[in-house]
Image 1 (cartoon, rainbow over the protein chains, first blue to last red):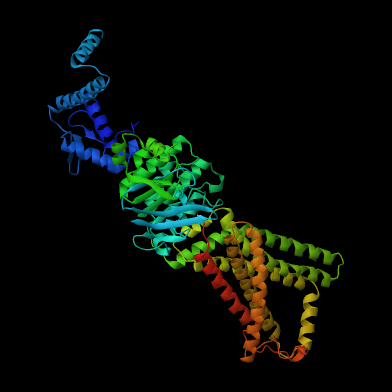
Image 2 (cartoon, rainbow over the protein chains, first blue to last red):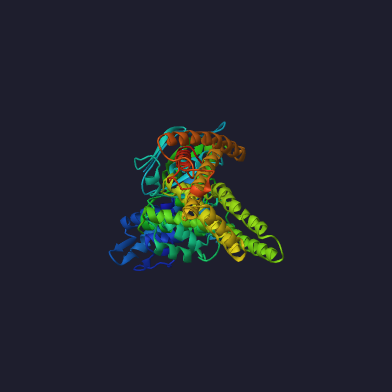
Length: 119
Length: 230
Length: 261
């Protein structure tokens, strides 16, 4: 796994898992690697992985069942939530970037509309 | 915990360490970073009891380096330090006699994981294989403190990955304190939790890696470039 | 894994023994061939005294090889960087150097006993055996003297080897303190320490004699007939042992507190 080392790695791990859920590579109820195995696989400090797992548990993306392992939460609304959240993140960055280039709200809207039409 | 208290060490006219002071907490993977010749190796050698400070002191769990602390420390020097005429197995027999924390099950598992053959003679294998052999003997122990001096230098990418994997794997099992000195940061960046940047034997910057990344919004490699102004 | 000092010592000892076994084996084979050659020479009409004389050269070599080895054992640790491994081990400097001393003594005993066996075999195969015995028997009154004398001589030679090994250890570790020219520093240390030690052991030996420890090997050095061994150990041997031990302890101190990597 390649990391963008300008951001905390635990956040990037969370993003990777989220993306896998959105793409359907991980489905609700699927078992994920243990923290140790995952850390070994991606060659990251196990404490960083632990932090990422903990965050995801508090976000109700992962749940750990004692003696069985860690699973993707079986919540039907989760996919929608994650999608919305990630879309929000992308938009926030996008908008602030556009504003830093000096675009006004209407201009941004127009640009988005025209490039959507051109797709 | 490893505590460096105002450690100064000179070799001839070169100051390898100059008032080096830091605390390395238990259970962390710590990176000791900086260009060559900034005192990284010297500090590890002092902690391992192979060298002595001119001024100041080093304490390992409150005790100065001695026979007793050496039993707690697994030191991997940058240099090839194994008997070239020994086979890997014979070397394991030799080293195992000295450490109560030697673990034969771990040894067997690691031999397989690293793809080593116990009957090969150490002097006759490639540099990459020797690096793996050194790692094998370091991690066949369950030493609470592991000091790795440039474990990746001069080693090809595939072996590097295996070595990093071995470190993660072992750390995940026991939660030891692992100190890694290196001048090649990018590969071990995801591995280290706490970083100490050294320059001319002094601390230039130290801190929790994720915090530093958050603060500087850039990678350790770039932080290092900024720190050293080059 | 259980660890104990005996096991650690054994590992260190066996490791160095393993390291020098090649040289020792080569020496033994050469000595055997040499003696065989001398025997064949005797058969082709060499005087047996000449053959035996040449055979005795092996005694000198049997002492010289462990002497060289006592330098090499330490120097090799630096040469192969294995000193990093040795110094990381949770053992005292005493144990490290004592195991090497034990290896040197082992090698000396193996080589000297082998040379002696070859020498005696050669003597036995020639008229020297008979001639020698009858001569010795004719001049001495105490028939057990040759054995006693041989044992005393042998014990003294072992002490001598230990003493030179201690000197070699001291000069090696002192040499390693020098950043440059450590070979030269070792050599210088060896000469100076050797000189000081021989003076010291002379002094101690004389002192011991005054205290009543026997000095010479036998009572009447010029009258073999009445010779008896007047005590064990002798003063020179004891003084060499004392000085050797002091040098050894000094070498350990230097190794433990001054040698750095």
